Each structure stands twice: as C-alpha cells, then as structure tokens.
Image (cartoon, rainbow, N blue to C red; front, top):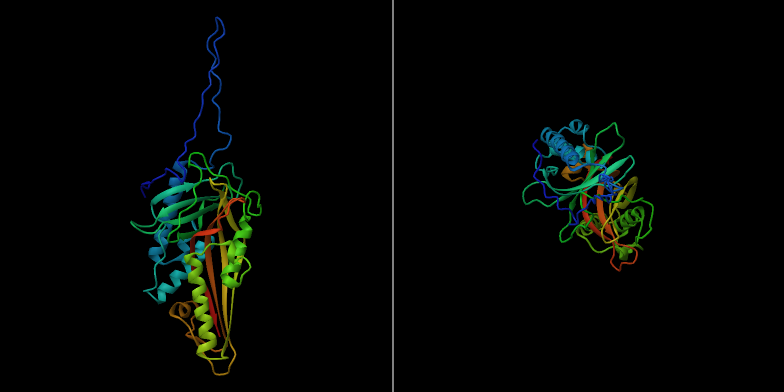
Length: 338
C-alpha cells in the first residue's frame, strides 16, 4: 500500500524549535561550534515509522475482512479488536446482511505518540475509514521490541463531540500512569471503572453525575431497559434478567491533553444473563445471537458477552466539567443458550 495521504497538523498547532548556540570567538581562535540543544524527550516513533505501521495494519485487516478469516488478523491485530472482528466474521457467515466491520482506513487525521516510553508501548491514531465516514480512534500496542505494533482496540467518535487537543506530533505526548489521579478529576482506572458502573446502573449509579450524557450510554442503557422489560412484562415471572459491565484489568491507556486533563481508552466486558424461571417458557434469540450460540431459543438460560471499547476525556482536577465519553464501540463476542 502506498503511504497514506495524511493531515498531521495535530490536535495542537505548536511546533518544537531547536536552537543552535554558537560560542563567541576568542582572540586569534577559530569559532567553536557547541552541540545543538536537544529535546530531552522525543516520540518513540517517527512519522515514517507510524506510516509504515498503519499501512501494514490496514493491509492485514483489509485482507482478513475480505476473507472473513480471523486467523489472518494475527500478524497485526490482537486483544479486543480481534475478539470483535472474529465474532463479526462468524455472524456474517450465517447472517450475510449483518454489518461489516469498519476498515482501519488510510486517511489519518492525527497521531498521538508518547515520548520516552518503556514497553509495552502504545500510540493513538485517528483515522477516517472511508470518505465522509465518521472518524475512529485506533489504539496500537507493542509488547516488546521483538514484536510489531498491533491494533488492539478501536472506537468510533460519538456525535457532537470533539477530541481533546494533545501536543503536536513532532513533540509527542505524555503517557500517564493508569492508577495515578495526580492533576486529574479521576485516575484513568477510576474513570473506566466508574463509567462501567454507570452503564450497569444508569442513574442509579452513585457515579452518574460524574459523566456527561452521551450517545453510547443512551444506546446501551436503552437496550438493557428494553430487554429487562421484555423479560419481565412479556411473560410475567418467566425470566430473570441480570446485566454487568466489568472493566478489563490492565486494559486502560491514557495520555495527557493540553488542557491538563487526559484522553483515556479502556475495555469493558459486558454480560447479560437471562434465566428461565417458569416451566415451559422459551426465550427466542436474535439472528446474531443464533449465529454465535448455534441455538434458536433458550429454555433454561442464555448468556451474552459483549466487548465495549470506550474513550473519554477526563478533565483536570480543578475543572468544573464532567468526564465526557468521546468515542465508543461495542459488539457481542460470545453467546450460550441451553
């Protein structure tokens, strides 16, 4: 693949300057050139390296998507991204009209590469999957120097939101400890954990007011309310319904934003469980759940596991703004029925 056409002005427009300092001339001596002042922290990847990584990842994903074969993802994809695509391939093999996974895209809008980062390393890239498509935030991770960067998670930008600004690509961004709340309203781990609780309990969560309203939360909670209503009202006393959203341990990444806050991305595992309580009751499954479970209905119980990728802006500690979810993605990855 040719190098992508990019727009890398960055989320900030500042540019780093390098000053060359010359010593004064001593009498009857030649001028002495002193070393250029060096930026002490530089991005762990150069722009050409990011170009190469993103091109290779996009090629691998495109080939796997076309073949519907998750094994082809292995060289450059892992984690939540593999889970979501693998499940979608399976569903589409049985339900061809089910939406295809979003491509990575070759149009990059901005890259955010941390500076002086030990392994495991990561960087963010915002891409436009197709002309006029909604941009997606891509997370690339590298476990050690001997393996390539892989696409580990991605999320679509939500309607009406703007990504927080980060330092210019040439400067690099600061990667933040995920359990450190210094200077922030919440630590990255706290932010993902509290949002997971909000997805589970909605306004009943004690953390509900810490987050602004967002389209993803509205969709998830709306689906849960509809399922709960169907389970309890369509056939009174027939089914029990439970839902949980649990942050995945060690699956949180964060970088500093120019306003002193943080851009945080985390993975959440969601489980919805239906238990048949009345003898003779049956729970019909949707086409995608039929594809994942190889069952058309449940007479005892059904469990649906989904993977959720959420990105949010955590404000600085002195800000009056709530935490705002800026990008998200979600899909079922497993279903069982008996």
